[in-house]
Length: 426
Image (cartoon, rainbow, N blue to C red; front, top):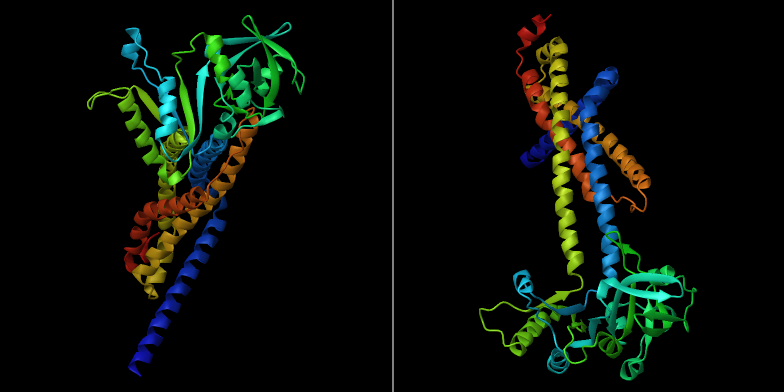
């Protein structure tokens, strides 16, 4: 029987507390409605702060997702091996390079990799000029093999890609990126047309699928030719400076494969234990991961700076709540004289401050959404903003926290009033 009585008491206390909270919320809403203009001005700081935070996060996240989606096309299972020369050594005229022997050793001594593809820059790399009639285009030019399309996940939009027989026969054929095709004013399907590179003529056999822009730079301004043909064009058949790219068959073995490739290259290049590598092994998704880390850091830092304006809004709430306590001193005295406990008075003013802050936060979220879309639309080619769920929840929670923190002082002042002194207040 005692247990049942205790349970009834607990249930009664819970119902009483819940009813008290409901009454406090109702009282807070009534007070806000009764002083509409004052409440609006009080919430203004919170509205501006939350809107600024949501707008900044939406724009940065939208840009981040747009760039990340472009980087995903590079493929997450690809490794690229390239030479590396410190800047000090470059000033001395020293240049490290990968050799054809490295390519052969990699192909035969490393398990778990496929689509091994050499890449060599041809005709001046980024400054190569291509002519078609009276039109000239400048872009990236390099030689590679048929495996390149499988490694980089890029395929012809029209025509065909390079083949093994093109490479074995050193044919003068090329595949163009979409931007280079447009710059040369070639037809939509230019297969069979001839372009001039230096004094050599090359037959166009295909155009690759467009990949758009990244960081404001086109990913389609390039030309591919067979690897052996590029060596002849460069005049360095025996000692070219290669890049080697390949696919890792098992993603879980990515780091282990990088380590084995590095060990093999150190052995082939006779690098001693304490000497630095003269090569770099890069994962294709490294740029995507690095950019994601940078964008997350920027989002948090900028959002933190902008959140300072929320403190200004909190100070405004505290000031108005102190005024409200002064105005309602006699009301508090009557409530205490009728038996209202200190906790009830404290809760009433805390909830009122929190409701003010949360309402301001919700208005700020809606305004932040609108501002971010307006700014994105006003900037040409800017990606659509994106607001993550954690930003919305965080803004609401932080607004409520600001209300509680800055409402403690006014609420404590109200709760600590003596009933007699409060009733005497004029």
